[in-house]
Image (cartoon, rainbow over all chains, first blue to last red; front, top):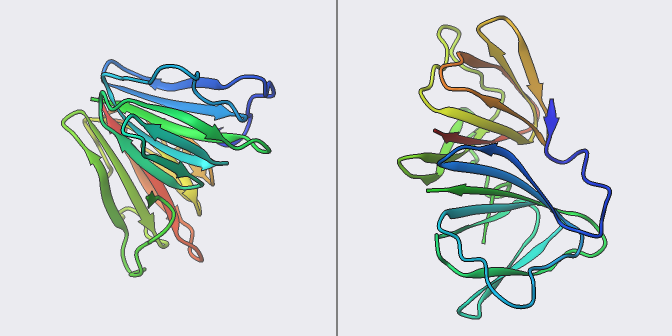
Length: 104
Length: 104
């Protein structure tokens, strides 16, 4: 049995992206962050919608309009395609486990 | 901010299905069970694939070949389209919160 919260990567110097399901229409990813954020410059600008939930830790997503949302355990939000966003903060002292579902 | 683990339904006499995302290709559902199982007769036989994870509680899924899997917190599995299955057990003393993603 696979477990989303176990066998977290040991290397805390980088963010880890793992595609669990990957079809033409749908991608389910586990993302594990250890304090990493998006690059200082630029935005994620995706042609797919993204539904994202934090399962452990916490993370802050900022949008181009200047608003931001901090997600803790169980919090989720939907990011429509081409809504520019970036991750400006993730927890420092614990892993942040994200579930991201990209869909059309 | 929406939270997947809060505002659980109060009515424990039935299972609750809530579609969070629903497009032609992808459906994201929260299912909350309070000891309920599938009907005694018949199987789920879906034309979509289903990726399912338990976030709280536990549940057992049985397959037509007689095998079964019990999922606890963080456990997930993928059920290919038309793989007949049913839920034969969910936790009695606590809610079981399932995340189900139906996709093609």
